[in-house]
Image 1 (cartoon, rainbow, N blue to C red):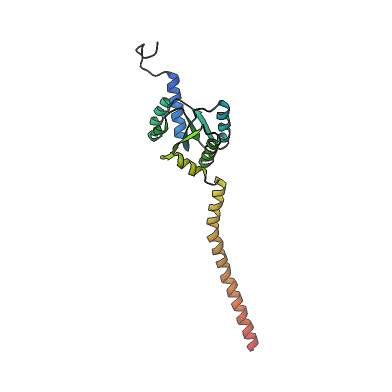
Image 2 (cartoon, rainbow, N blue to C red):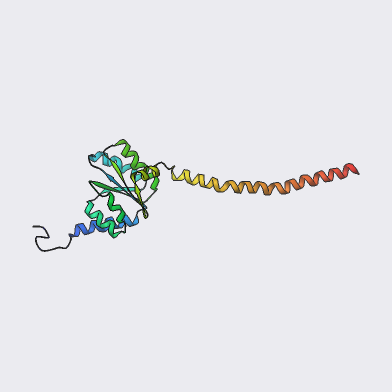
Length: 183
């Protein structure tokens, strides 16, 4: 007999534990991506998990009803719209763009994997948003470009500051030579 038939409406401890686990993961993650895995083999799922792990993400399958409860508890009600059919969650604790890239590349290689969307912070993301995020250059490249952008005006300023005394010295030298020629 089920719990309801016994008159016990309390949720089972194992389900409560799963909801608490998912809630904690949702709160800790930098981003959460939702994908549909219908038709994927165990080996294809393993092939998906490896690049995601390398990018600092964890790919797990949970029951939608439990994830919906966890999403509500974590204040991520907007995630619920993506929870239809057999879904898996990708919890990103590392580089969000690298994780999105790993997931979308695997979806291209394995048509059975469908990226549905997700959330990054409070922002709801569609599948197209994830593709745009995946196309971003790696974090190191973005940081290098940013550093170069910051450095350029400083180098220009340093050159100008060096030019002032140098030009003054050239002018002073020309004046001295002109005085010597006149004398």
